Length: 473
Image 1 (cartoon, rainbow, N blue to C red):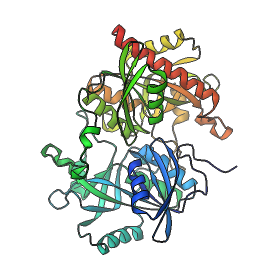
Image 2: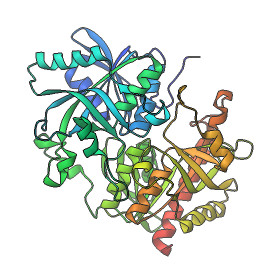
Image 3: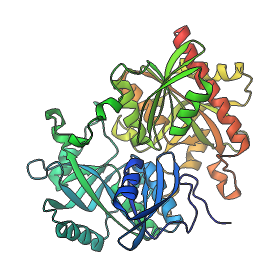
Image 4: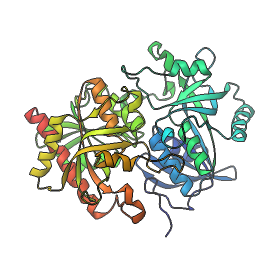
């Protein structure tokens, strides 16, 4: 049977061996449709969009990977499984040398500091995340040959944190002092995956500002080229105080259009899609956050800045108790193990990532009242890793032995952000398999049993949202 990537939705052998990757699905479309001579769109699922293209006689592929290390690592792994031998990332970065590296300059990364949130689970501590030297030189020299003089060459930092936490000291200044010239979110994940899978990788970034000088206005990712950008952004006060969040933009659309009585789409940018909805007299919002802790933390921070006071996550999880917790069951998370890749940069080591108890009980009891008997209540693990590395021992078994009943990728990030920002948060998940038994075929996210479980999860979530709004729960 030909392998089909569960996230990218492409098949083994369907892509070219050289792939250019970008964060934004819209940028993948732009490259394919505007800059290439011909193109074929292969798939578009969640934040992952893939094209085969031809440019001046050369055939290669273009794909988007979303925001943050854990989600992009999934993309890189699946591209490699489908035939990629060279992956080059085209992204944006902040300057850590604002006096000499300015907005619009290019940075070619030779090596990356690994604070991306997933590399630590892929390669040993201290293992260097480095780009392919020949590709680095080719990127620099090609840029120069095209007349681009402001091209910089050096080490950058990959950081899991976009919005700094008041509880943990950030490392931008110390990385700059050590020689880093820029900061972004994904390069070290790319280089780590490339190393363990034996492919070549490189990265070039456009500078969009300086995070050391954001307070002075040195951040302008849209610049003057996006005249209507502000109209497409979510503004403070535009959302409701209660928000249901999901990973998949398509699931956000499904909830708004199928399960709610009325809806208004506010914005759709990258993997982030936001609606205001009404359900049985209760007004709340629905938003998607993409895959992985770093990217979803951005979503939660911006929702809070725009007025969210309660965030409830409706997602999927793997069972860590396969004998008793089965596909299609629901898990209400009371607390989350924090291996998500971003919580460690938001709260102190050992700080507990816990859900709001009243919301947890409401989720469990609401599910039961709707006739859903297979509802489990307990601790889950949030893991940055979907595809395990052969170089680092995974922790699923030890977390299960400690009492964790399930595993997913984002809950601890939600609970950490909620704690530092002073809001309430909870999570309910549908079980889509057991990662301890994937080799036996126990993973079926699109199967009938799991699909029915997702419907139960959605109905539970929106009914709890209704109770929070109307009953002031």
